[in-house]
Image (tube, rainbow over all chains, first blue to last red; front, side, top):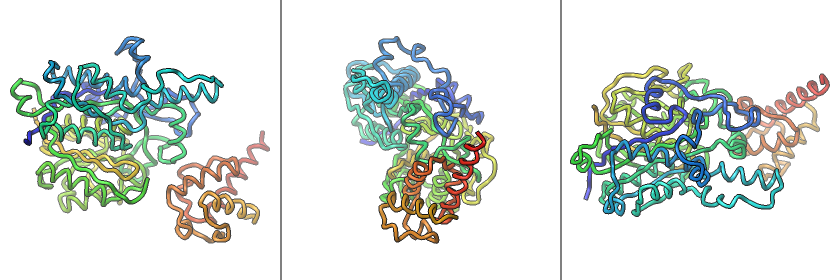
Length: 405
Length: 87
């Protein structure tokens, strides 16, 4: 059984907005939401800026008891899932609960709760640890909470492959729905990396920009960390149409690969193999592709490697592609990145507006393709890819088919 | 460039990189010593601890040899001493 897979629900909470509508208004206009960090003391890390969810208060979304049971990253997962399910207009009756799946991605899990616990232990010399730390910190906390929310009793799990987590998660969910293993899947990713311990670790990696994120720009100085979540509701296109659901677009294919090259240095061959694999899985000729939502971290190394990979996959057609990195606006949300970017890609195809690469100053000869600098573009595109390439050399690429409205 | 500073930098790099001290000379390049980007951040971390300085990311990216590293550390140490004296 092979079915076409529709996206009928999108939920999102990110620096660029606390709902799908806010997010897309900001992204489609090319607004960068990178700001001075507020979640850690000023001056405590060398880089001052991040892409935090603005004015986030858990009390806007859940009662105190609920909030106390969930780490920030799992709160984001739940909030995005609720929006996606409402957007899809789905009711989970008993039969659907048993045949539905939840697959989430998270790179670091409940680090905010862990960091608070460690602070108590090491700095405040407490001899005890907060009792809910284990279920709050587990990487599957978001997936499990979503399954509880709707009584979903089918396959529920979490994938942790660093910055590719969400793409791997959505890809797995897509295959389950396509192959009839699940009738509905809620899939995406969530992340909350703004705790001091983790930020200090990122500082020592020396990949975070001291100012902003300028993907593909000659003077790019690194990535900017982001947080948030995005969740998609996937279901067979035929079922979606039969129940009259609004379809944002389709997931057409998924490809993955491992570089087996270096633990942190990317390889263009590995990235290229994942893109080819996604196109093959989608059954799409490379000439049909119009847009790539790039991994585009804005580090000196990632961007030219990604451009090289795109050239090797698309040959002369690479010159006709629009390529942009929306991380320039919502930051690099690690295990949520692929999900946030999947939402951006679907909305781009749906509305015929290609979001730009923001903060772009000057072309880099090593990134000499059309990276849609600074200004959004109106364009009818049928097929797009969204790339995620992780530390550890793990690559995951989703292919989308637009459902133009 | 003082020999003492060269020796201290070499010792830190030998320890961080797990290589014999005698393989490191002032003219060694990181490539010759098989120091990749990941080794590099480890070495920068060790050097910051040894000399109690902050090595900025942008400057660190330009450094490709022991001579450049020693020269960079020398400037940072001098700047630190000047600022301490000013206080």
